[in-house]
Length: 185
Length: 185
DNA sequence: TGCCTAATTGTCAGTCCCTGCCAGTACGTA
DNA sequence: TACGTACTGGCAGGGACTGACAATTAGGCA
Image (tube, rainbow over all chains, first blue to last red; front, top):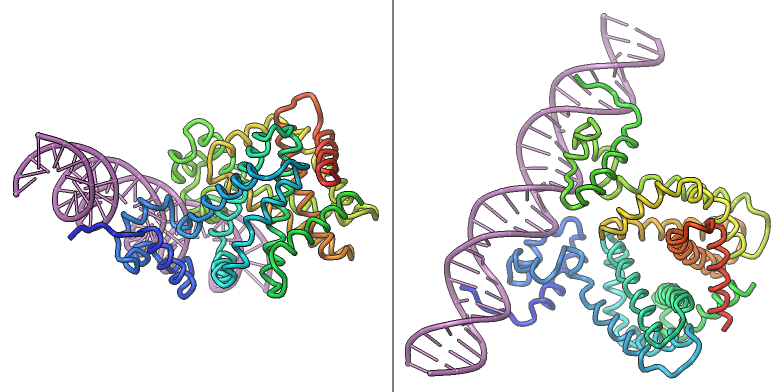
């Protein structure tokens, strides 16, 4: 009766995004997701701390990649290190454009997901800041570079979503330019 | 038996922050908050869309003040307009330091509140961006100035909380300096 | 082969958040 | 008086989430 399931996390994730897309977030219950994945509600809550987390567990892996990219980057000004790391990791978007857009559509349609996405962004910013200070970059500069990097990241993703022609790196650089223009006056 | 209550929102708010502070967020139930406020659970959910919102309903008033300050500001570069508005509105912090710190301690201690705070920040950023474009500031510059303003705002509040000596405006200006240093390299 | 342990899943009961619905009360207006 | 509007209480119920315990599987070891 009880048998071990391979890739339970992925199965929950795929079932959830499909149900959220077709029926909406609020009218999809956790038991429904579990049934579609061939598991139970109780098991769902063993893999995810709550309902929205089912769409965000990959973000943790992404954060680790960003930290690794910062550690491996050549010495430079703080913000340049962050931007290079963004460019290095961001190729994922160009390679998986369809999946990313589908997930973004679901996230954009439900407040619960937007809240969670903001928390992941915050976590990413703190991780970037910590990685910079580990490179013996002064605290205030590290913090500002991390926060600025998150802003560039967010706006670049937004523009990239609406522009099928240009790659992600292009938008990162364009955003950096716009930011510099606004800040230096 | 049923009598109209004056300032129900404020009563809920005060009762909630006191209970959250003493017993913690998770172990404080909505019926407990309602009882402490002399009202019922059902009425609580008529004033607040959910449990965390009881600590954030003032943020909406604050956002309106920011928009007003931007509308009334003299012509200048986009980011300067935002920063002047922050300085104009931010005196509230110096005037209510004790209350602000008490509320911040509760928010910092519970994830639910941090999520909600990030959403309010996002909403504030969008409102600032809209107010700037209403002043016929170009879209990309408005967006970047708004996002940058939010970063300055967040970091300035953080530093202000830990520094009883300096006023809020001082930290806004210091953050702006740090940001310019990081961006211009 | 058989036993033991750890890890995973299912089952069940229970708490809390939040909502819909109906009834009761206060207040203003005609 | 009659009526409408706004506010509140009470009750029932669904859905999110947790704790405790049982059942199954996988793997190590004698």
